Amino acid sequence: MQKYEGPRPPITADLRRAVEVESGHACAIGRCGEHTYLEIHHINENREDNRVENLVLLCDKHHKMAHAGVIDRKALREYKRLLRETYSSSLGERIRRLEELTEQGRILETEEEVAPAPAPVMQADPSLPTKTVARRSLLMYATLEQIALAKFERESNLLLERQPKIFKGDASLQLDAIRQDDDLAEDVIVEVRWLRKRYLDAPIWVRQVDAATSTYEMITGRKARGVLIFVVPKDGMRLVSDLPFTTEEIDQVERKPEIIIYTYADLGFDPRAISSELFASNDKSPSNTS
Image (cartoon, rainbow, N blue to C red):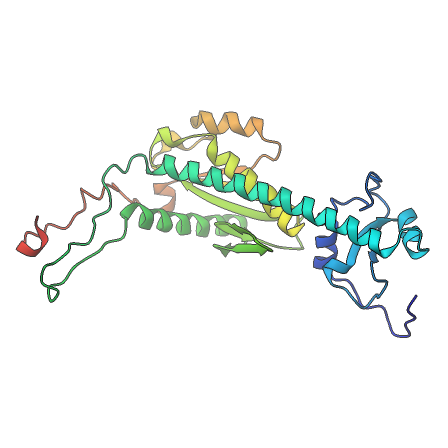
């Protein structure tokens, strides 16, 4: 075993958390199952080599066996490989499920938008101007989202990071907002959904924030709680009980997100109608008619 005279290089909290999450907070040796007295072992026994691929979580018994050579380095690397493959597969499945939920929600949100966004007018004369426009619904959604997040910040006294994207290997997670804070018992994940009409109430929104929270915990190893903010047009949708599908789904999920509902009046902003047909410019010039 290599001898050291200097102090042992520290393993950071983030590094320790990554090793623990990868191992499921249990001993890495197959079928051991111990999850109380755990230690991080350097596979190559070089305590200055704190690369995550050189670190494995072992119980006290198996840690002693590793140092005694009863469990050799080749075996430890194989246990580590199996752990990483299992973790990557599980994380990939969570990401795929979240992407499916996000796509389902996107379809539900756009069902009302029967009129497509105006396409650019193709001019025979390239010297004439052409125009493209952003989809009004997307702009209004973004505006309501940021106003709602600002209101939540004031009420909770928590400053949020907006539109964070978290990466780990090939996996990535996009969120509306997050507060990572070691002084809190849990990080706070905030997702905002705009319910323009009552029929947009659906189980999908609770499932999305539940999936986002669990995926975040798996990627980072940090505990988190979800907050789901609904922006609604009127007082008749202010209470969670006014949203029966949301209410029913909350009873089904294990980690129940906090539900906050803001009306347009609460936010001081009314996006009005979103139909692109209603808001087309009244431009009768020959170059913009068909």
